[in-house]
Length: 335
Image 1: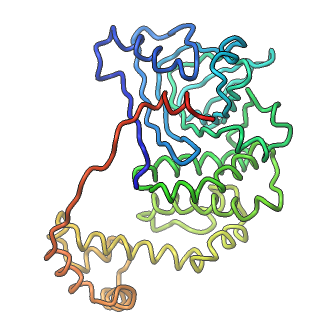
Image 2: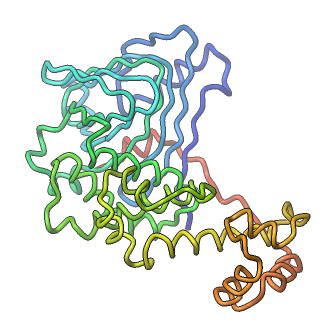
Image 3: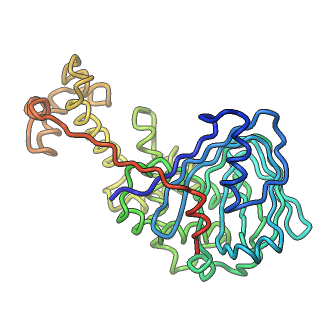
């Protein structure tokens, strides 16, 4: 079963209706005290994944707040971790102001008062209920309003993980979401705590692997991709990267396997029917046609030619199983 998905976009509405609808939708999270851009737009693309939520928000500049009376009235009890990839947002909690931008993470504790002011921005967000997250944190009541700098290794790793979750969202199942919940919570706790304890080692390695796998998948056409570059991207040592990839028999074996699977996809794609098998193989770095054919046959138990003929003899049935659910109701119900 696919994850529930909510897509909200004010750009499809007349301009005079955009701000009222946004205010009404955002009441599950914030009171909007001011809109600071003359022409307003906002969009949300969110996934409900077991007990967690993740997604992206794009919005015009605005000021928001959560005050004591509002907190007492709505009883929301979750953390929202926001990574700002475009624009910036200042947040004031307990009289201290933080400015998040350029990949920084802002921690919002929905049980604590906060005031924010943003430019036009885009953030990638992860939402976790307190009942699951608090037990993993040191001094859990001290994190609201914190800014974690983008260049901190654990912050960078968590950001990559959240982006990987979002990109994988349309293809994830409910079982995938349940499997990833523990590693996601462990990685988020490690980022906030600044350390990794022994109990978090295995789930943290799982979360790291998801981020590494997504990065490799996004860069398979870059034939200069190397273990050193991937390790630097995630602020890992080569030894740590190799440990993370041990279950897939190492970096080079995994890269070759994924490119071979991309070849298989292209062989079955009607849009690539005019390319020869050798041309498709070369486009994924397999320059030796006979070696490619032998590797393909060993992996898939048939030759590339036989696979292509079989693929084109089938009629593929595709269907759109996505559904639109109100993201604001998810947040209001998060406990």
